[in-house]
Image (cartoon, helix red, strand yellow):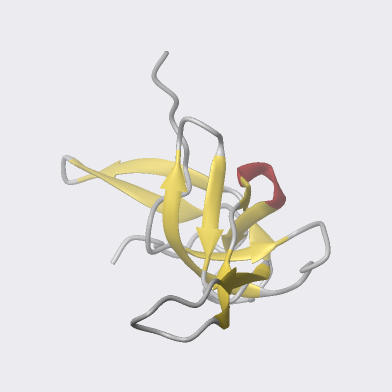
Length: 106
């Protein structure tokens, strides 16, 4: 089964539910097999590294994935959550914000 998501790597999104509700960031990774995304600066978890002969132990902070249904595209003009629509202009498929109609693709 081939899943299709409207959220892609590099998109600017806002978290709409959960402990990080209201935070924004860019999508770093989209995991289609598990319906999850990794967003920069959202869902920070601590990872304990065991000490080895080469390096001492440490506690790292990194972004964990969140479910794709918990994020929405960020409207470039209003800064609110929005859905997206597709339009063909000059034979090229473009992604537009439903809220303001502004272009989401670079």
